[in-house]
Image (cartoon, rainbow, N blue to C red; front, side):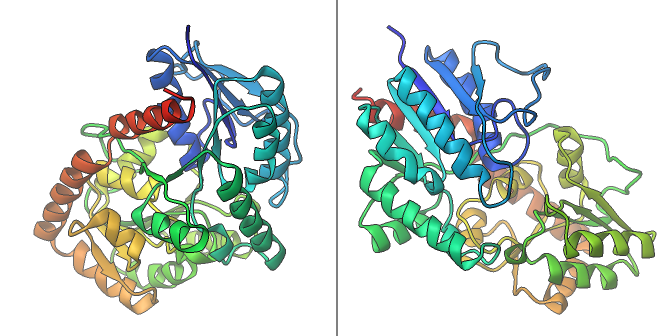
Length: 366
């Protein structure tokens, strides 16, 4: 008899919003091909049901929730958990400790759970005091009621042992080599700096914007991303783009091939993320062979090893490192090779998906 799994806590299948959604686009069909009955809970309007790569064997179920920055995850997680409690799958994969509040519902129905704890959300500057408190309580509930937890970096695992005395299954994110891609948007291969990020404080967006003004006196600069809710950083990106013909703000890009091309053909990719664990965008940038300049954090060093340049989060340091890399074709080629090699050895979707299946099987009792 097939084993059944439900996935709770993403925007659905197939969706292109962020790291969880990228994981689900790879994991759901992998599990289906292995003989699992897979159900992915999602939100109305957040998926591309006409995606040619969609696996028809994966069941997508939309539930209701409140679409707001503070309540989306909680409300959709609640309705998904209630639905799962009724259908009683063999195991549930739950994304994000915010959904730790609903684990007792699943526990009461004797549904084993595997919880991806994501990053240390209660440390993130983008959340207010109440939200950080809510995430911390959700983490405590996850530690108490989650049968197994998944950590995407060794540093996250260290924090969970230190804070909650829980160890986890280490499963990072994967990337995929898209093969050679033509440059897009009229950009010269190797001749532009790139940033891809959600516009929040901990992604060093403000410092990069200041650096971009200096870099753009000699080089093209491409900014990919937005806050998702509007705000000052979106307005600033718009002003930068309007005031300089060399600065290009694209907003969020859901076309993978276009985004992969931007990474592959960049002369320097700045990765400013300072919190979280293994960042999905960083892994995919490595798979595309982007020459990477990363904010110096324990998380980025764990993923990149020697295959990137590390900088402090100041405009002057970012400017100097990116300018140096844009002017050095040999260094660009060296970083491209080492990033691809490291990703192919450590961060593939095959490794990731096999890790999740093992964890799910263990939680479900074999």
